[in-house]
View 1 (cartoon, rainbow, N blue to C red):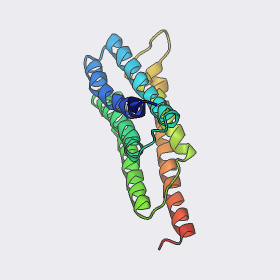
View 2: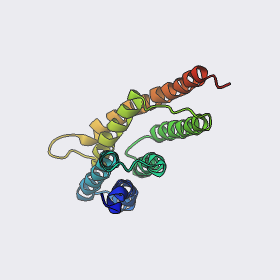
View 3: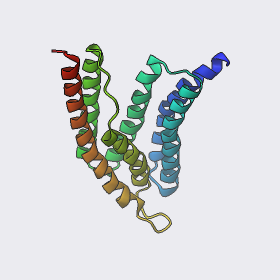
View 4: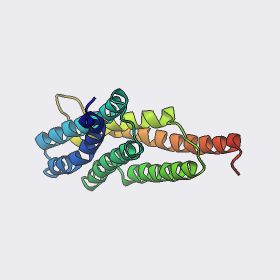
Length: 187
């Protein structure tokens, strides 16, 4: 195996972050054509989340930096685009506040858990939340009927479901941490 193969997962993770300015630039004109292009780029960036993990396992290139950067890249991508959608008045600010608060809360719990030597596995609600966001966000970006389908309305309500799952998964992480602390004997 070549040294460069072990770098592929991190390069893929970084592409998620590099996509952000491109997507934002495409969103700025706020026209159907640019919105569809921005949504397509968002989907491409979202798909990289699968491939960085796939290649990390395939090339045995799992690293602490990769474990750290993968969720950071996701957060940068999602939160940047959510903020743009708020400025374009396509989603409610409350949605973004809940999602950002949950992500900050989870990051805090993970930091405390790591300091206690506890690893908290990803919860199903969190995985569903992420999957729904990756589908809802590009739909909302389109913001009008396209090929006769009201993607923006469907995406808006799917994003609300992801907000509910954000709260649910935040609660799951918190109780998972408490349970792990108790079983490990950490005071």
